[in-house]
Image (cartoon, rainbow, N blue to C red; front, side, top):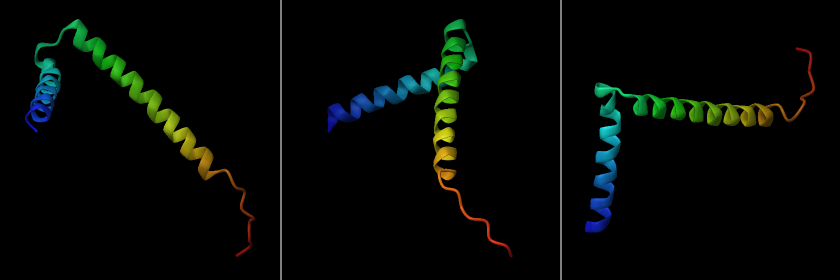
Length: 65
């Protein structure tokens, strides 16, 4: 288990340092934030588009009340 734990702890530390980087903002951090924001936007748009298409894939008959 030790190698697995060490690998994941190292990954956690790298991620935490990336999040803390806002304290010492630089161009690379800003660029990384923009790339992540753009990628998330694309992913969310594609996901919601698929959900919308699936939800509207059938036309229901309108019944009077």
